[in-house]
Amino acid sequence: MEEGGGTMAGITSIGAYIPMYRLDRQEIGRMWRTKGSGGERAVAGYDEDAVTMAVAVAQDCVRRSNKQVDGLYFATTTAPYKEKQSAAIIASVLDLDRRCGTADFTNTLRAGTTALKSALDAVKSGSAGEIAIIASDCRPGAPKGRFEQILGDGAAALTVGSSDLIASVEGSYSIFSEFTDIWRTEADAFVKSGEGRFIDEVGYMPLMQEAISELMKNSSLSAGDFSKAVFSAPDVRQHADLARKLGFEASRVQDPLFTLIGNTGTAAALMMLVATLEEASPGDRILFANYGDGCDAFILRVTEEIARIRTKPTMKERLERKRFIDYGTYLNWRDLVPFEASSLPERAEPSLASRWRERKVISLLNGVKCKKCGTPQIHPIGQTVRICVACQSKDAFEEYKFSDKKGRLFTYAVDQLQPTKNPPGLNGVIDFDGGGRLICELTDYDLDRVKIDMPVEMTFRRLFQGKGIVNYFWKAKPIEGF
Image (cartoon, one colour):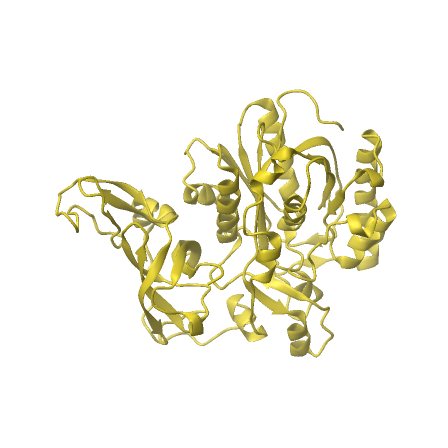
């Protein structure tokens, strides 16, 4: 159906996040003495999950937009909680206004575009001004199974608004289908699938053809009218088959990125769209479609504003930033094999009350800044700051956020004893640009390249899980390119 009525709505900004770690599919094949499918898959780090990747990509997207977000929709099939809103966690880390509308879209691979449609409707109706749509997934594939090689981890984000559009929405068409092809029940640890040929003939192919064909028919357009076609698919073969059946030339079809990072679930279609928009020109018409329990299809038209979001990192740069891990490391990070428990004392678990009291430190890495001399300072969680370390003024502070500040590694210690999924551990003292010092863990580092005065930035990561609570906090990581 055609978009019409109400306020104009479209895409105002984009972002993507690809974990730096890769698992070569030949490595998986060697482990099980089977043939690797070629290429590599992106693997979320030992301290990453759908929420931490969502935070990273949302920061990128909102930075490019430079607008106040008053809605945040999070799409995933791998939320850390069965009953607790992940969107609220992400919004708190982004320091959004508490009146911001938050919602989780889940239980289907089409959740990202379902969230996009909802955001477009909200903006057009006037109930929201700018909404961030974030899709992020770390879907589990059973060891030795085909999904272990096919799946990958990643996140993508769009913001939707009514002004400064980089792409307007000229039309959309959606259908649902109660067809079981890919699924997981509450008791399932890994993704399951029906028989491949049956899915091809009854599920993916006919549904996508129907939705896309109807949209083009209603808009009086054909394959040749589009500069690029962007659509999700379960694998490379079905992606190529659909493009051929719809009449799209291979040069006008967006690479699904399967050989480079794998199928990233709810994030896959949006990540492909980000890659397309980063290279699009004003006036380009883009077909965008996503599959999962039906199909959502859109016609997008790129505007002159597209030049505004051409900031680094680009998709090409994200794909090139990588470090390979072995299969044993992958098993360890995903808790797929048991390991001997550490004999060291376990880490003390924070209470719910203390987590609430220190929520601004946990979510924003908030410290204080002296009103008299302007010195920023941050103290360990649980300690109250009353005296300025520089001018000795008492109780003269204002809140100061450190999470968005870069810094330098003042000193560090390599920990060979503390139990960690990525041994050895690395703890460092960070001196922030503009003032302030913090002792914290480091992540995403190459130990051979760690050195004093190394530039770092803060990243929101998963620490540990205890008593059913997922504990997140900030770590320092080397700045990309170092």
